[in-house]
Image 1 (cartoon, rainbow, N blue to C red):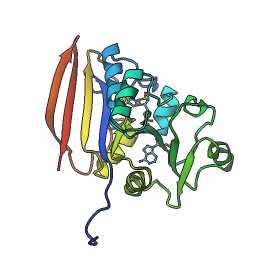
Image 2: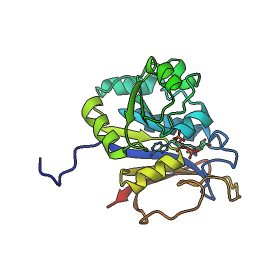
Image 3: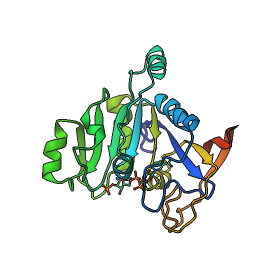
Image 4: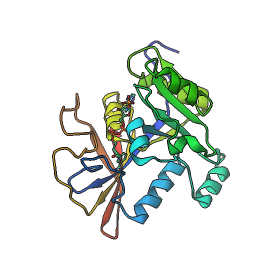
Length: 232
Ligand SMILES: NC(=O)c1ccc[n+]([C@@H]2O[C@H](COP(=O)([O-])OP(=O)(O)OC[C@H]3O[C@@H](n4cnc5c(N)ncnc54)[C@H](OP(=O)(O)O)[C@@H]3O)[C@@H](O)[C@H]2O)c1
């Protein structure tokens, strides 16, 4: 391999529901529950395409999600495509402060991988070690490129579905590690300065603006589903 060639990484697709003022949640970071049943099923359809799903610690906590795939038909389609029945569950946290009592750690058929750092508190390490594979970087923050390489090389992840939240999504954009974006615009307006947008609380600019090209658009019951590719 030439020095300039990057190691293979998964194709990364992200999925968010947005209000019309582009908020992903309320000021109190309540679970993202403002989209329709159709959108929630679409979320599962997108999730089902992934070899793994990736979520930041903030979302796992706020939404207390199991990161599973409760739709039997979607699981059957995965098996027919030679994918595992359930996508791997990948959680990322710099601090390592994850509560082992969270729903995601209470069962579910798919293995869990946690990418964190040596900052993970010892009790959490001991409690989580029996429930997940821990990758603890020596660096103060998780090396996203190394995580992607490991997912592809050691876990066969070719397609990674990122379900947020905004802090994670922004960090992936900054590292140029997003390939596709699905957004559902919902007919709601939240307002306020403290409700996070797609890239978090509107504050710092991205180092460069990200350009997108529209691949698909569908309107169902007042919601607008958009699929974009990231332009490089
Ligand atoms: N509308 C939607 O589609 C949608 C989707 C997802 C989430 N949400 C909402 O968004 C809110 C949560 O927002 P959030 O910004 O806190 O979510 P988040 O990005 O899931 O969580 C942020 C935390 O995740 C960890 N993290 C994120 N990026 C990381 C990176 N590159 N490296 C290492 N760790 C990383 C850090 O955990 P540590 O602090 O432990 O280091 C960080 O504090 C919730 O209300 C949720 O419902 C909405």
